[in-house]
Image 1: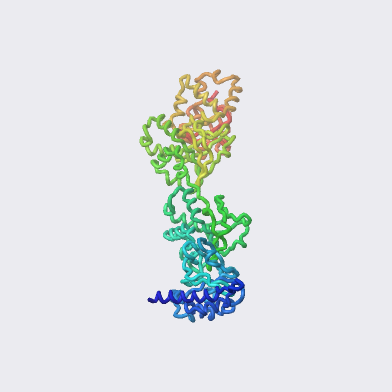
Image 2: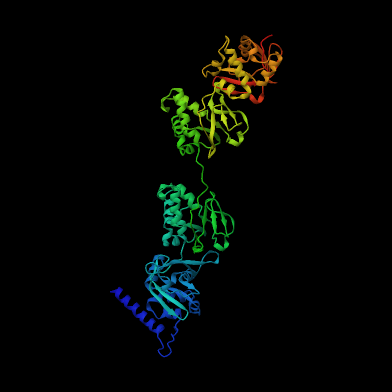
Length: 617
């Protein structure tokens, strides 16, 4: 019954207003102008009496009576009563005048008569006369897809009531001052952003998103609001089907990159760095674009900017801004490469995932699946599972150079030694020889096929062979500057040597030994000294005796070298640890090359010298 009475009163009001404003002069066919202004028009309707009282209390009678054009959304008495109850006010007189003034002005669109016909089947934003941050005017969202609603809450009940200074639409709710949340939740094209804010709140967000964007006292903020299409593109880019496939911490980090701790309207946007709560992005004020730390560019939608709420302004964008992408670590990088799957399995089996995922810098030489398959076949293993874990661990660590990101450019045209994480005798670390003279090769066997794969904790070079644990023979044969020493060892083996040289220096279970390795230049000098043209001009027994004077039956690193007698397999020589020299029984002095010492193998250590040591002549 009450509803019927209300409808009857409104219908009567409409008929009266229609008669007052729409009479025709049949004689001259000219439309008569309405004689009542907005306030006077409201005073004629008993259903708008609280609105009239509010206008009087806020001192807005003159403003709404003044000539000009304005559109007023007029809440009914029922709307005001519900609003007062919702806000905890007993009556209109309890509402502070400054608050009431802004609420009323939020129902007034200045300088234009907006008729319902222009709103039907459209949606968008306009500004009211209410004030927001930085002397801006608050925005108002209209949706004419089904009737006409404002800010998603207030529906037009009676439209297009003409007055002498504007047009009035009677609405069923008081339109509260909008927040950022108001504009996010009312525009269906921003629904995924709303979902993202709510989802981030289920984790441990940096800010409580829903509370923050809903709080009229917070901020003010600037929010760059991605459309639903922008979020859909991101999900496709990340190859996930829903936001909930992404952890809340990541969503939190993403959202922070869309919030600026200031109310920046489009006219205030400048080109350069914009500091968001999540990090710096770059703005181009001329092109109206934002570029994130990953070089991904978002366009600010020029028809959807400066959407002003009490706690900040919203600018709609067409691409989600991402925080600076964290590079995957070494293990994650290997997991992403199908051709490194056996390496990943090996790392898991050897319990090295933690070590290779830890922060820091390291260089990893990553053998391909084909390299691992060949290595297993060569060693007589049917599968990775057959390799003892202690052996597998050392082999893998022999592919890791700690505490350095060595790029291919560092190795190009260079040759030398560094250490891996694999363990050698006396708690030493095994050495590895690199040769960048033609491509990049390690220990004379493994060639880099893909270089400089960057990770968060190092660099990866993909190689075509598994690098076995090196022996003394490995370092002698891989370094071209020691090729005559290799020839000498092989030549001595053709006789009846005291030790089978090639077998001994190649055997990882032998020794450990210390080998003083003469360079090719040292051997060339010796041949000149002996007035012969080739090693083969010297008896194998003599070469055998010479070689024995270069081998010590212990792993003596340079730091362990002491001044005094050094007993080699061939006899005693004298060392000067300070001068880094060796003197043979003939008084001939060899210098230990300080840049080529402690070349550590699994069966001994090599120190390069510049003169051949001779037995007593």
